[in-house]
Length: 167
Image (cartoon, rainbow, N blue to C red):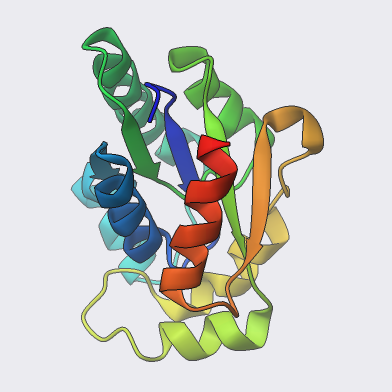
């Protein structure tokens, strides 16, 4: 794989962590789950069912961008699993990693809600799904992105993403 950084994005329940982890393994890349970069106050708000504001997300996006820039600076391929729901969030990440490729995990509300219902112990409160879907700005063709349906198995998603990223 080249050193091209990859963003695996989508709303909660789309499989970002699973696909991102396996894609990084397949590509020999470093992996970071953006959930681990949220400040404790953000995690508490989401646990309490309170949607994050852009101001809440600012330190988190900065941490994500810094991680991508550090990987690029060290010449390491990188995969970041991050919701990056809005275009301007992705623009922030792209400023840190200009060659960023995007793998958008696309799914319908019913499947996403079912998946969230089977994630006990995660800080994300499933009542926030609708707010995430309302905020989602699907990546456009000018964002160097591919969209993959989450109805595929994780193995198929990783295979398709790998093929798209390496050809």
